[in-house]
Length: 224
Image 1: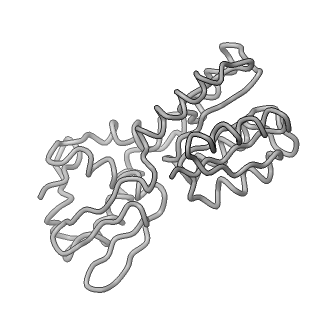
Image 2 (image 1 turned 90 degrees about the vertical axis):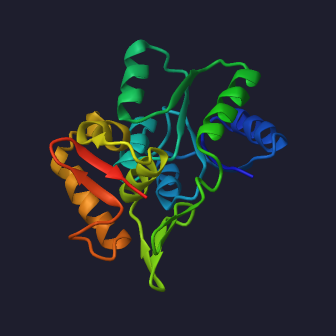
């Protein structure tokens, strides 16, 4: 079962969406206020956020920007009457994964929700072994030698990208684009700092990593 956060101030529309999403087998948490929506989004645990833009308290754009500053992964579907190309481009630049304008067809909305959840399954991504380290992205942690090391949202997103691309040399610029998004203006040093922190959690000897290796002049590779 997927947990969806719906941030929508139109009560009738929200109740209709909750009813239809629950009929599809999802669990839905609803709030009608931008400030409350941001607080719930930052609390985490959702598999998808459906976000209106014109909200009391905080605008949907502000909610999305603040959310993406700490959570690069949870998919966000904007659902709004604002239909200009400028609005859509701004939403995608802030980190939205999809944008659907009102009025919309219920079938299309449910299909888009299903598509997003297929790409980001509930419980996100399972467990992997790297030597004596156990990576659990669902619980956002690494366990080694009986100790648990929690992952930050960006560490989790970075590690998941490495796990999805095992053995491949990944350039720093690709990691910036896929994990942080260029619109956040990080630098390649951002990647290096996060890799260094990941190594402390993954590797028995971070100074001589057995798994997360540097490929000089190119980037990084997650080996066996």
